[in-house]
Each structure stands twice: as C-alpha cells, then as structure tokens.
Image 1: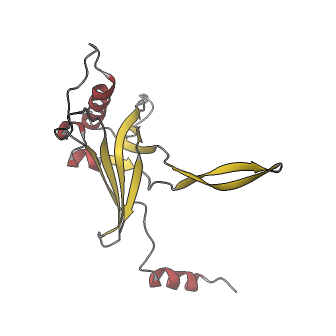
Image 2 (image 1 turned 60 degrees about the horizontal axis):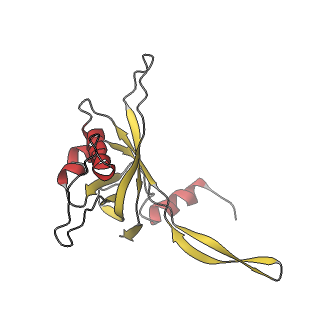
Length: 180
C-alpha cells in the first residue's frame, strides 16, 4: 500500500482532527485547604505537564529453569509539571507551604489541617488534566488522586539569560482515573 499525504490528511480529518499538546487545562487542588492548592491564576502558569503513563510491571515466575512473565501490579510514575514563575512567587510559595505542612516548619511544628469526617491530618490533594479539542471542548480527562508534592526544583538565575523563570514540581499520587 502506497503512502500519500492526501490519504493521511483525510484519515486525520475523518477522525475529527489530531489532538494538540498545547490544548489542555490543569487544575491542582489540596484536599482540605484552599490556601495550599493552586488558584485559577496559578493553574494558568503551569506551562507543561503530561497525561499519565499506564504501567503494569511484569512479575517473573521461575519454572524449570526459565523465567515466565505474568501480569503483575499496576504502578504509577511520579507526575511532573513545569511552572512559569511569577514575580510574587505565588505558585512556588503555595507548594512550599504545602510541603512544610507535611514535613514540618522550621520551628518543628506541623500543620493542623484535619479532615472533619475522620479527624486525621490529610496532606494530599488531587489534580486534573483536561485535553481540549480545537473547539475548546473537553475531550479527555485524567484525575490524579491522593496527590502530594515530593520535590520543588531549583530556579537557575543567570545574567546571560533573558528567558522567563521556570521550575518543575514533582508529585506522587496513589492512582489516576480516566474519563471522556
């Protein structure tokens, strides 16, 4: 079968067009405190993220000197977002406050954020990545559950650079859900 650009273009057109990586929305929230999640304006500063990978780790079972692979457990990679830094450091300060609430402040105290239903401290939240169509309609949605920041990357400063400051935030999460 010969490949032609015309058949490729018509195939994409028949599928309602190709998804574009630049058409997305991100929403990052803390489970119990609005002050620890990203605001609507902070969510706009998320320059890049990723739709999560789906992994099932192989489980090797040895039998008669050979290793046979069985489907193992589902695993979830950490999720990293790239954030454009604003001059108020608002998103970065929010993430640092979230992390300090989990790990403790400089004076050794911890946050007293509690879940009113079960009375335990909860430091996780959730995030949603919405893939948009060229018409701006949500076509796919991925929700990360029980999410919390594990790392806020450094911000390089350099006299020779005129670029906007950017940094990454890495999150761990328990699982993700997919919907259309």
